[in-house]
Amino acid sequence: MNELERRDNGADLHPVGKNNQLTSLEVYDKYGAMAYGIILQIIPQPHLAQEILVNVFSSPQLQACNSYPFSFAVCVIKLARAKAVEANRKLMSIAQDGTANTFIKGDRSPQVIFDLAFRQGFTPDEVAQKLDISKSDVLKAFHDFFKSYSNS
Amino acid sequence: MDTKDFIESGILESYLLGLSNEEEKEYVQQLILTDQGISDYLIDLETNITGYFDQHSSPPPPEIREIITLRTTKSDIQKKKHVFNQNSFGQESRKKDEYLDIEVNDTYIKVHKYWRPAFIAVFILSKIFLIAGLYFYFKTASLEQELVKLKTEVQLLK
Image (cartoon, rainbow over all chains, first blue to last red; front, side):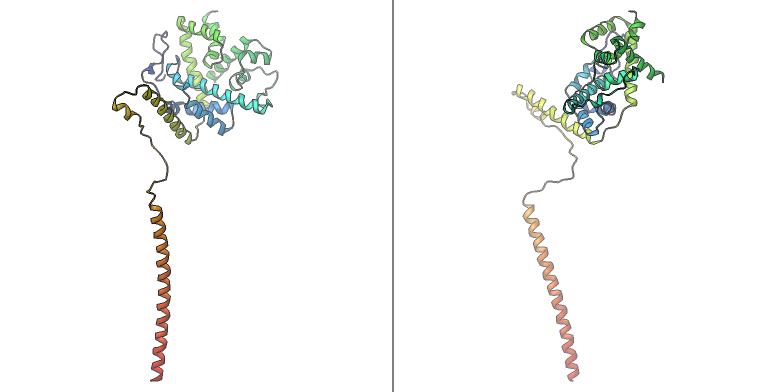
């Protein structure tokens, strides 16, 4: 897998690279494009997205990924998404028109559910309420979403 | 709930994407430690999720890297300053650590401030010499013409 692959016993979930901690620039070189892609999915304006990208990679929270129990990539995904969703919320509160939160009513496909939760920043409970389904259906949709991706 | 049902429930996806609540997080963390099947599945899931987002990646402009370099260097200096203040009786080598080697990529050079009047003086003198040169050139040329004219007149009188 990668340099942060877990140890073989499975129980020890600390990253292998713990002693050899990655710097912000090394992480950026490796995952910058991926993080930028995620931010652009949430905030399609390139200038704002670039500002958030800088914020992600100069954030002290990034160093916490060195002690994150899973791969660095997943930690970067979470951090980039969290920062972009936070910025998007601020933008929406300024605009107050809710145009970005549009979705086709009645469409409960895993793609739509994933979009609402990951890109638009709703919690699984809020998504369930919006689509009038149970929370377990929302969570199951996440599984189906990544399953369909791995099968394709 | 057996392992298969748990995997299909999507709680693990929600956990990895940071969408789960505290209760679910604790539950998953406990299960990871006790259930080898779930632990193994998480490794595949991480690869799968990373692969998905890798597919949607977009290279940022190169300037972003420089901005991050500057910002991280600045925060490193602040951190070091803080440590230095705490250990003010540290060794001389610690003072050396306060200086960071940074690579500055710009097209400017710095010169001494006396270069400005020197440059202005050279510029004004060059203009004066140019004007004087042109004046004497044209004056010489007109005198030569006059001389030729006078010589012709003298020859005609002879």
